[in-house]
Length: 421
Image (cartoon, rainbow, N blue to C red):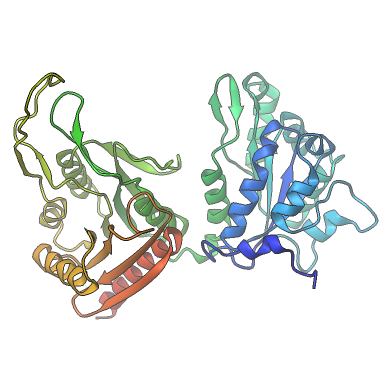
């Protein structure tokens, strides 16, 4: 009854993109080790199994029991007669698929570069080099240590041997650990290179809200966080696509640094950015997931309206239709639009989406009711209907990562069908 640890119930909860993958999470003596349970569990939610390895210095910062709880696997804190390094990283059946050294101190980076293996972490990494297992290192230390010329030389030397580095973020005189999403997505990309079904395709994706100012500081907007569009972009990127992400000011989710991004404010800015991209570069797919403001002020004031104004009348006019303009620029691009409604029947939701789809010559419309609980703006989950000319596919309530994956799957099926015809 104790063969499966209860913590493993989260494996694959968000996605199965890492299903069957095994990751050795090698933790060294940086205070950033405190973040490793979060990193481990994020990887598990994508389907991976995580096996923690800790240096003695790491165990003095975070208790191994915490990592055992987080992963459901025994934590390796010393090497014994069970030759744990060979089991994890040797040329044996069942070895891990990748080594993630996170956080990595200057001491450990330099030891790895010099082939020194006097800790469980460095011995596992040395073994992985001999086996050919991919290695990702995530540095975390004080900025002065990171800038040490020998540390920088050692990083460059390891990169020559195919080791990938993530980060660090240099802030407050510290070379801080890269953001969790960036670490996780780098691992996903490395482990899914053999299944890059979108390689060679170019995606233009929009996300987040737009803002329509009525005076120098006040604006009309909506509570979109940008999460749905970002999850779509991440899914496409992880599957090999070349992705450009246009996001609105007010987007609250963290956008990984590996994206090519364009930041906009108003709907007109967004529309212009879309058209500029489509004119200068060939894209295969345009996904307009941004929560676009439909109206803007007729006369925006360049100063602040006085708070003592007894009465204020704001006259609005429609904003440019971004998808309409995109279709004018590129007659052949595959366009996926989003249609948000508020507390309507499913029949009405689908009908309104189909009407808009036909008006704007869109290939696919993703419709959802943001008036329902746990759906739409500022939520981790969503329920949508994928509406095309002759089909409606209902995607029931689940997390946005899985919704994003299914939207991309649908688009690729459509593109493949077009090729066959």
